[in-house]
Structure formats: C-alpha cells, structure tokens
Length: 146
Image (cartoon, rainbow, N blue to C red; front, side, top):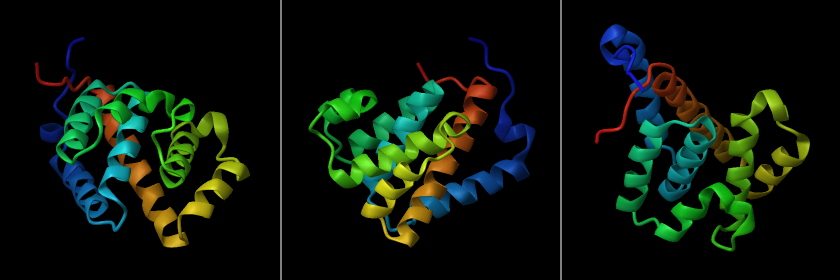
C-alpha cells in the first residue's frame, strides 16, 4: 500500500488540534491500560495497521499482558477482561460501529453500570479521538515503521 499525503505537514493547525485532544485524553483519570485496550480494539475494527502497531507497543510498555493483547478481538470469549473493561469494550464497539449499532440502550446501560457519568464522557472522548486518528491514518495510508 502506498502512503498518500503526510497529514501532519499538509495541515499543521488541524493536527495541532488533534494533538491537543490526544494530550487531553492522556490526562483523563481513566486507567491507562483501559485506554490502550480501547485504542487497540477501535483500531482493530477500523483496520488501522499504524495505530495497531503503535498502541500494542504502548500497551506492552505499560505492562499489558500478551495473552490479553492476542485475544482482544475475541474478548467476549475469554475470561481475561474485567467487567469494567468489558463494559468499555462494548461501548467502544457500539460507538466505533455507530452507523450499524446506533449506540443501543443495552450498551449504554452496561457502560453506565461500570462508569460514572464523568468517566463515561471521558471514555467516549477517548473512543472518539482514536476513531479520528484511525480515519486520518487509514485514509492517508500512514504506514507502520518496518
């Protein structure tokens, strides 16, 4: 696959805003391991090789278990994820596949049972941000380093 444009140099002001949003997400009081799982699951759904490469490395650096990383795409069929992580993954999939799911009440209710209103908004912003990064990286064919 051939890279298209370098979105960082093509629109520095837009990317400055994206970086500011990413910085804000990194300061949210949610568990860092949870945020990395959300970033990875979103990137799996969106087929973003660049983000999968980056966030799997970040997750490992943060102490994430290899087994959980390997089975994340099949998280429903494993015993490796906590109820809170499962609720976050349900909400992640629901919002990432929004045109298909329309964020059903049962997904919201599960997420709301594990996260406070503030945490749920914070989680939603984190999901929104990685979806935006995926769209930039996939749309412009940003490649992982070999």
